[in-house]
Image 1 (spheres, protein in one colour):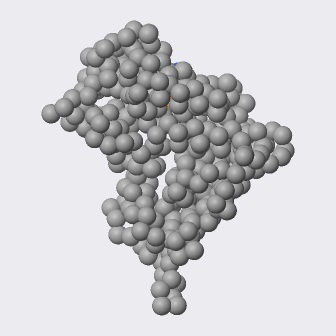
Image 2 (cartoon, protein in one colour; image 1 turned 120 degrees about the vertical axis):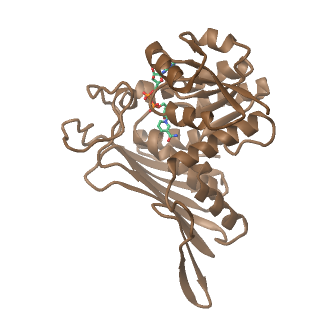
Image 3 (cartoon, helix red, strand yellow; image 1 turned 180 degrees about the horizontal axis):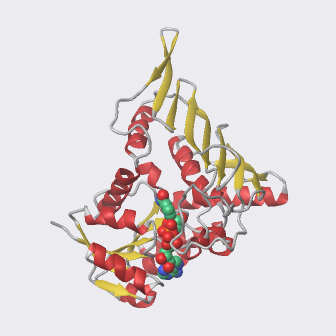
Length: 352
Ligand SMILES: NC(=O)c1ccc[n+]([C@@H]2O[C@H](COP(=O)([O-])OP(=O)(O)OC[C@H]3O[C@@H](n4cnc5c(N)ncnc54)[C@H](O)[C@@H]3O)[C@@H](O)[C@H]2O)c1
């Protein structure tokens, strides 16, 4: 069986989702791992039987046996490491967001073209089984023309601290960390319309609330609550050239309940993909709520990562084109950057 030798860059919290999925893919050999934190890399190497541990990116990328890499580092290194890996002849799966700024994203896109290698952006929700099912309904015209989408990714308590809360390393707070997932999912299911304008607001009202007790939440591998200069919450209205619009909000904390919802409205039908998969339509003058009978009615984290990794491996082996190519990462960075810019300047940002 064809074998793809994979290297992992970054051995923190999310690397397990990648490593688990690679280890279950029979076409993959987990070959090398690199992290600033050598001990963490060694622990993961032992857990996943990875033969080569590196503490230097140059040496890691100079290893000709590494054919493809997953980048699971802080956001501030996504673009530079992607470019270096592509230029070293590796295929790349880069965790979301592709970069911190639009300029960086465009440089990654140039490197993809220059190198002839493939880059997949880790928009994992695109690979969820329910997303794939809904795509079939949409592609067959069941929702008609989708003119509005609405998405929320709200945590009442969930600033992961460490680098996530340090703008220099993250690029921002819940918008670039959580909002990115649902903005991308809506945009993808809406048929990737061209963005026309963006109006956004960000708020820093509650801090990271590290004082709260008795409620646990996702933490960075190097959790540190002492630094926090990112927004606690963001919202935006995104207009597209085809007249469709998307309303979104995301928070690390707010006085409310946790909420993840993704809803799409078309002129023939609607769909909700989170919190539970549902299709809404009209037949014979009657409104119907359709509840698809599927194994998991919500987002299946493990299966989605498995699908994402399997798809990446197939794309590296030349059997398919990636579903989340670099140009989509660029478009999403354009939207995210415009939301931050709009909030900062207090104006709507328009594109030609
Ligand atoms: N797709 C998802 O659902 C999902 C979920 C969580 C995190 N992520 C993304 O994954 C990335 C990592 O997040 P995490 O939660 O694992 O963070 P983490 O802090 O737990 O781990 C990051 C690791 O990367 C290492 N690192 C950072 N910069 C490095 C560099 N330049 N070179 C080598 N090692 C470096 C750190 O030492 C650390 O071990 C982020 O970009 C985040 O947005 C995606």
